[in-house]
Image (cartoon, rainbow over all chains, first blue to last red; front, side, top):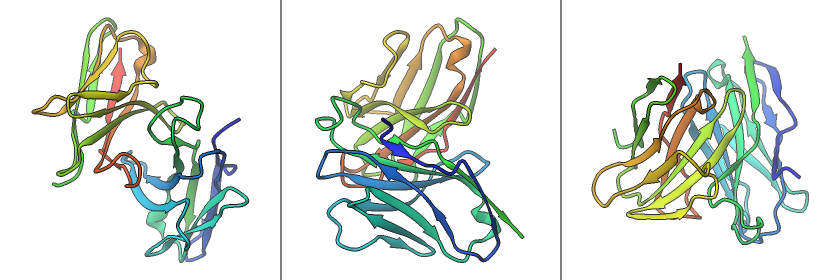
Amino acid sequence: AQKITQTQPGMFVQEKEAVTLDCTYDTSDPSYGLFWYKQPSSGEMIFLIYQGSYDQQNATEGRYSLNFQKARKSANLVISASQLGDSAMYFCAMRDSPLYSGGGADGLTFGKGTHLIIQP
Amino acid sequence: NAGVMQNPRHLVRRRGQEARLRCSPMKGHSHVYWYRQLPEEGLKFMVYLQKENIIDESGMPKERFSAEFPKEGPSILRIQQVVRGDSAAYFCASSPRDRDQPQHFGDGTRLSIL
């Protein structure tokens, strides 16, 4: 089973509308972290927002917020008032312990990404 | 620039040559991670290093790939005898601690094998 699932390969959204990008995850580790990164066409990876599994409140960073539903194992990214410059690939990623991932990697596990296109 | 520095941005090699990719972490960061991104895919973890130590290399191919993070100087990802399938974007990330802090990425090195 995939550890990180992003079910939307692509999305078209009208400028100034809010956008929700879906992310579900799978882990048995009680302590984990969830991250969202943006990758524009120029290729760099830009950190957007982080949510710890024990955080009581949903993370927010400017126009970005994370809708964290722990029981559902979902961590959707919400972008308010979308802008043309938001057009990019968006990746959800998780950090849990190798002890809980069956001896897996100590780095981040990424989803396959969502290609977001903001239309004027 | 206080961010993660990777060089070169683009690297072209012929099959059988060696590729060396460099990464200088953010100031104050002692944990370095290397990832590989194939076209149209997310990033795949390769290796996690601290100064002079490889902590986790479970994502590294068993042959031809090696990584180091010496006491002085940048972290190096080395690919010997490159093949066409090594063509990818290689990203380095750094963090101040290994779990709780976000990993900040460099701009990546695009490796093309002719």
